Length: 475
Picture (cartoon, rainbow, N blue to C red):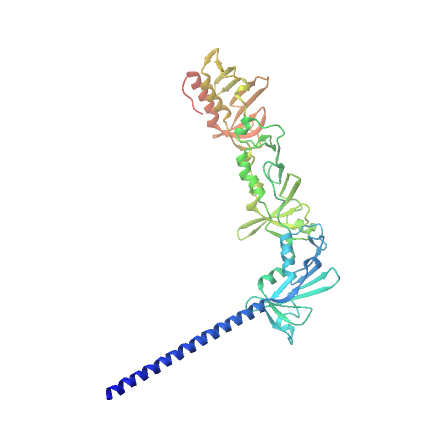
């Protein structure tokens, strides 16, 4: 009997424990569902709060926007259906993407939350002396007003309109755009589309160095020039020379294609500011043209900030003073020798009648017979030599490469002279005058101001002697 009572008691206790666990589970499920419902409700409310409309304007109805902030004031005025300009600077282009984003942000302002529907004092929100005031004039004459006040602890801003005293909280990214400074609207990009094929001319005037002028070569580029790197552009100043295409593309063209300003310093285009920034007498004037575009930049003094060098710069036609990074325009100080074709004398062997090499007590004259055909003959002192080996000697001569440009011609006499007599009767004289222990000054028919390596010239004499002796020669 006692055993049966104990068994019943255990069953009752077990049943009670099961009921307790079940009740606990039911309560837990209830609480979870309640919390989820609250979260869902809170999310819906939050979603609804984010949709609070502070200001809604049809973008096409905006005629003018007057902006007053702590640093400056300006008025954006509609010029046509798609373009806004600054009042008083109607002929100065603005950055269209910047202006369009500003208009888009202004036309549909939404708040995160309503801070106070009936504030006792707007001063508590920085709205009695707002940091920025925007007045929007519509086409129908109606004026709307938006005030931007203090920053909230989360970095957002208090705002209100003239429609009521209700204060809203607007997110930071919207306010940042609406408080933009005037100078940030100006276009800092140059016309795009420049290529080596459509470049008409390029001119770099420099206060402390030679002017560089590059123009299109109106004559077709020969196969020899094309192989040497000619691109149909011609160095016109300070000397006449074909361009080295690789150097020109790398050192000038590619940087010119991507050239842009990094900021606008001022739109006060007074003579006082031109003097202040060294633009009354520019250090450089960059002028170039492609297709129907002609661009001129006047470049003045340098500004150094945190070891970064920028030039003060004017783009002709803008009446603005910009900052141009020096690193974006290293070609302003480029040397002539850097971009001139390395091979200064290039003549097809088929056009040559004779070559005379004189210097260092040696004198060689080679007569080329039938040089335009496959059976070329070479004669030296009436003796016929191996024509194929002469081609190697010829390559040694025309392969003499300039290493730099100098403007002052040495006063000493030529040490080595190479004279080409062409089939058309023209005579080209290449003179090599000592410059220093490593270089010769190199002139062609009395012009050109390049220097070349001494060993590349003396090698011509060495190879000429080897050729006569029947020895193997190398370029």
